Length: 134
Ligand code: THU
Image (cartoon, rainbow, N blue to C red):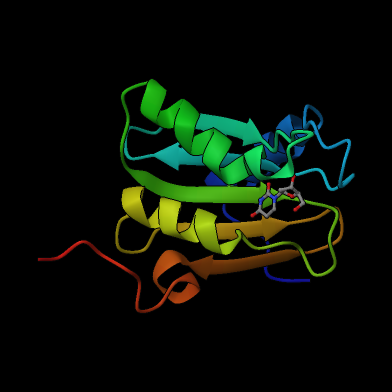
């Protein structure tokens, strides 16, 4: 087990755990909850939303990002992802790219499960990313 988290990150993990209860995952049975904090201090949450047309599935992280953007916010300081995986599941490749769009240097990623925690910064999670520099 990793070091105990600071209170603001603990709260994010708890929000991610709660929103996971609403996951719509009848195809994979793999339920994911995500909760992110923005630079204004607000928290936005999302769960995975699967579809009979599998490719139409939205990951929990991107559901949380959509809620943030719809509320008019743009800067993620931290995100927690809650699964039942061993080790706790990290954001998929597409979600990493989407988080990068709204992350800032030092944005923290916490992957949690009922048993364990992993913690990493966004720049370590997605090194050498694609950017639209012309
Ligand atoms: N999933 C997420 O919600 N986040 C990820 O980062 C990886 C995968 C979801 C998509 C799908 O509903 C289920 O987990 C299995 O892939």
